[in-house]
Image 1 (tube, one colour):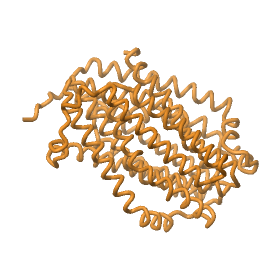
Image 2 (spheres, one colour):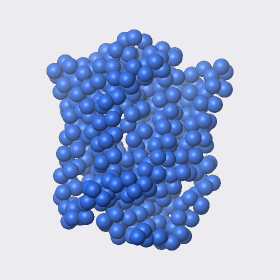
Image 3 (cartoon, one colour):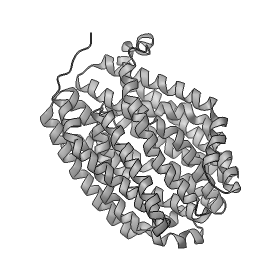
Image 4 (cartoon, one colour):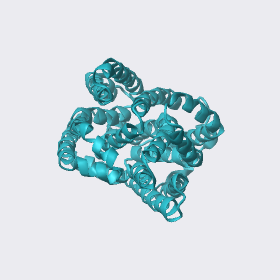
Length: 439
């Protein structure tokens, strides 16, 4: 079982190591183009895309779960149907996003509280990067499908291409051509389309024998997409709640001025840096859970879950040690602004705590996804989002901006407790339920 887990997790970890490079490269270059306002502008601009794209995360999550279960049943016609539905939904969603971009940005800055300089830079970034929407959302769908097919090599290649291309494009455009914030945004757009071309090429290379199952007319009928939309409706709500937490973190930090916004933005990147390692095992958990539920193999499912959590604890321990030894150095890689660096010391202890309290929740996310337990995922995330805001408002008068980090930690603990409590019913129980073939 460990060999199976590592075979799936290894490529995902290698890919995930490069995933944070998009945000890190953008922030690092912004930190060298100007002052804290430039970092803040990129942070707010990135947050605006989180509002759009994270809500579409179901394109990866739901697609992966459905595909893995179809793979477990060896039903490749159904897996191709899921792919067509996912990519079709991605493209329609991208067109909608492009259509509402101006309305969206006006409404967003009625809510986001920041300085005029940060707002101007964020808008400059947004209106260029928005044209990557069709590629970005399609990549979500393809990645989920590949993982469901027990193939983490292809998304690894695609992710590495996207993130290396982003680095090269952004450095060339923003620094060499001196395009500044516009160059950062344009580099991201070009990288996304480069990744999409590579992904389609991989699909043709590995799965062209399955193309005869493609039936656009049948797959995209509303009746055929009912289950897809029901699952993804719950995951959409889950994504909205998760996004409220992360955007709430950034928005609340912005209340304290550009310097603390810059510090908190970098801290969030660092706190979640370790998750890109554990998410590799989360993807393995998604693939294996869906596969064994589809095959109704309870013994293998329980074995996979036990071993997945062993790996999550190992990663959490190693990550905490790494943050202890190199946390300050990692922060300095993100900016050379001395005021921002000096102000970060009071927040560094949170880096040691986050891996310990979040590793279980992150692993359950992958397992629940493979089980397509979307209602439970939705309900757990609603409760944890409520705990985030309740904790912040309760403790802010007492400890100021530190309440923001406390609230983030509490929401992770709530996710851990609830998902652990309901796992027997929502995960193991599905493997015990006979699969009904639809006529």
